Image (cartoon, rainbow, N blue to C red; front, side, top):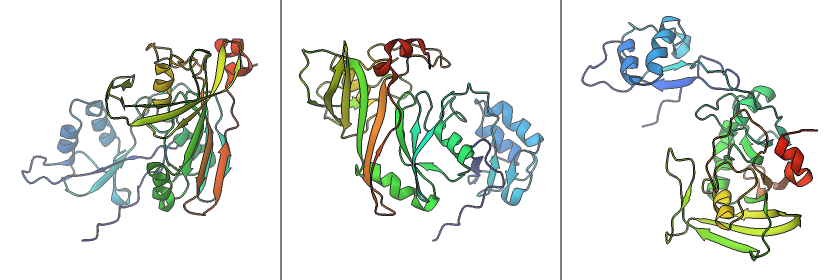
Length: 320
């Protein structure tokens, strides 16, 4: 049986954020006599328990075609509803997002440090996705992959919904060559280049990922020293897998924690509004064949790692 296409959202994006879409489940036991009863049950014990009744009363929950829904409306399984959550204020990340490449299908952006790629947790409007959608008027923009919030550099986005799967498969099938640049202590006792292979696991709710001794390897990184300056090395990191925090974990396991890392080797709790000492890790290159146009690309970030140019300015946050 062909699935019914999703109805269009009756609400526009706000600051690049889509409205929440909710499909009402079946109710064979008749648990919910009306919409208000279902939503009270659905959001019991969450922040929505307080906010959903107010959204309903104020006419901010809409059904298909833009119909305003009320708490005493009959429950209709299978129907869709939409609403925008109230978004708490977020401290602005005061750095621009550069565009390295753009055509009608693909956009590759230069994400600054401290900016999440996509909305998650307390980072919603201050994300690369939301800001690019809003700033470039590209409401259908979608990420092909994600870059850690503290890491700067190249992130690929699909402009058209019909191309999204092709670009995401590039990363799932490992058909993108990625190269990173990192600044870390210099240790002449460590022989490089070196290929690191280990098992890295990330537990939900735990900030740091962990290497599992003796586990089947699921993470591989080539580490090379590009050049050195004083007691700091500039390292070229080539990951062959994409585990969470992989490069940071592998550099720390070598005894070369990346400058500015608030997690490895020790978890600290910096003020999220303190933009000094950004993690000195940069997604420098992306190389791939575009699955839609067939064009071959080798794209390079235009950003730099500040501690390499001026260690004091990096430590103090002086932008010059």
